[in-house]
Amino acid sequence: MEKRQQLYAGKAKSVYHTDDPQRMILHFRDDTSAFDGERMESLARKGMVNNKFNAFIMRKLEAAGIPTHFDGLFSDTECVVKKLEMIPVECVVRNIAAGSLVRRLGVEEGIELNPPTFELFLKNDAQHDPMINESLAESFGWATPEQLAEMKALTFKVNDVLKALFADGGLLLVDYKLEFGLFHGQIVLGDEFSPDGCRLWDANTRDKMDKDRFRQGLGGVIEAYEEVGRRIGVDFG
Ligand code: ADP
Ligand code: UDP
Figure (cartoon, helix red, strand yellow):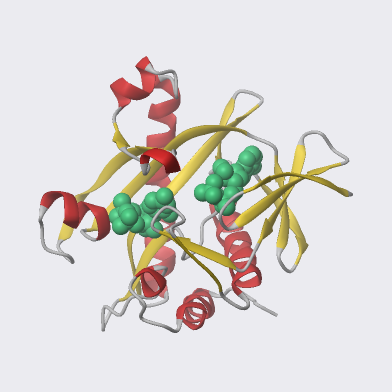
């Protein structure tokens, strides 16, 4: 596989063409953003840590029968993925109340959500990723009802697999965001799964071990990501 010109640079990853029109290379940079890109910082080792973390999770999900875009590692900070036609809708599942749910509803952080909740957000930085619903997604053509139903089912399946995986490492999977795309008409999990896009708390102390350490200026961001990785068996080399 040969890396070709850059197609797109997002806030934390860059996307490259390859010699295969159906494959792309995702480069995980050290850049870290919060609050819709208002705050940007470079954190040493982050690209490598998230690339290897993501590879480990994607392989676990594939093994559980969840279709993902992940093909394999390309370097310490890059992986090869299937080129998807991305659906501009973010799927969020929550097992415990935190973040925007707490701000929006005024509920207490840390309460258990039973059953877990499912929310949709439009991927649109300029509009601050507004919350949407299935009706809006259908009317505006962001996704069909069938696609949304499949995305929801897959997002909950991911919850079953990952809640158990993190529990074995003494961690609570509080919430997470997933993005999907189409590959030959099939809904496939895209983008990444790393502590940048989920919340993970230590099960005993409830210490935050995810991107909230960056958002809240708690320090030790990458050290926490590495600790999470070690607890679930990621090999950072
Ligand atoms: P953001 O778009 O939030 O700034 P990133 O910095 O992570 O995010 O940029 C990565 C971009 O690549 C995102 O827009 C994401 O939707 C897109 N992407 C991720 N995986 C794939 C894929 N397999 N095919 C096409 N696009 C992808
Ligand atoms: N999330 C994300 N990207 C986004 C929005 C949310 O990765 O653009 C993740 C976030 O890290 C958390 C979950 O989705 O794990 C739920 O986020 P929430 O709605 O609480 O928003 P936040 O408080 O992060 O603004």
